Image 1 (cartoon, one colour):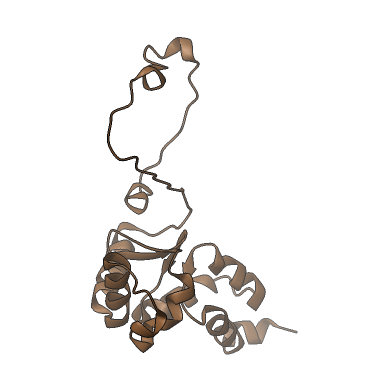
Image 2: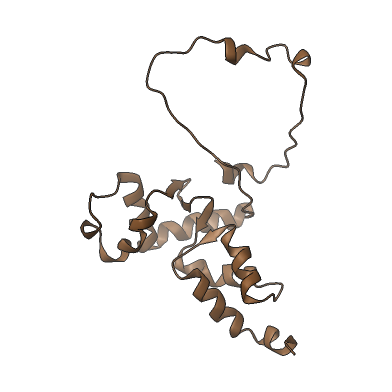
Length: 167
């Protein structure tokens, strides 16, 4: 849901309680009986256009590895890592951080990128032709995949434009 809301330009404005007629209604409302649901959402600054977001969803659904991971997250993890398919065992240590939202796999606040979009993401991260560490820092705020750090290093080292501008 947070990914869908990012396309709107929102402003949060403080209003003093005396200007809000029902300011404390929720605090005075009697709690309903039933199970307590603990919901924790955070706002994060992943910026994808609506088209790119749709492409991310489509590519995630087309990628068999991501589909298997998504299904495991939704259905629940097995009790032991050896009960997972070999290609998903690398995510065992991350299982508490992985969620699915709108058909997109998230590791915390970071979007997991399917194989088919990795090259595009690397190009975007390195679009300013910054060095390896700055690209890593930029990537760590919004995207994730296994060996991301290594892929960034390889991409930056093989960038001809960056190579020409380095003294």
